[in-house]
Length: 254
Image (cartoon, rainbow, N blue to C red):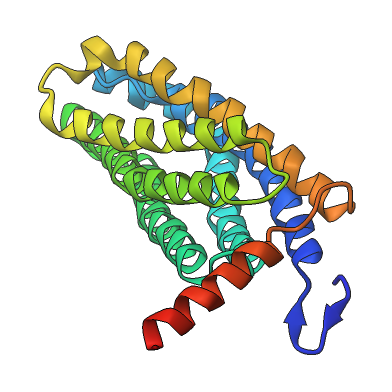
């Protein structure tokens, strides 16, 4: 573990934990979502979904384990980002951390449905058609539970972008891209709920979410590692802003 001051983790150490966590999340999420779990789901065909899951059960299990790792790492990242930004705006940093933790809880709950799908395949049954439908329903329940949690993740990104915009020395374009990514996540979740024909627009929504999310979160990763290396200043209230805040406080009390 990195050096600490007393019992408080240094912001640069928190930036290192968050940056390394983001790198791990990128790799794990790509494998879990696109190469393992997502690869077997065909919403239009219970038979195809069941057959693909049966044929690639080992890969699917590794994908579920990768999602479990994402679940655990996100807890660390939420903590690390709070520590990093609390010197800039404690309340906003705390709200951002809580928003990410809410998303993480939903992801943890969603993992239960992956286990359910695996158990259905293992146990089997005489009614093949019903079994295939139950497996598809379990995977769709995982997907929708995760998507609902991503709305909270979107709120987290909006708050994170706001913190970046208030951070001296942080790229302003990066803050705005992260805000746009957060809004896109929330809009996508709402679209899942209100559009009966969402699959017809799924590719459009995927692009709307993926482009700002990948650019923004990769940019945040690079910025975090630069802060950890001491090549960018840690987020903190500037002396001028702190002095103005004190004067405003004195004026209000007067």
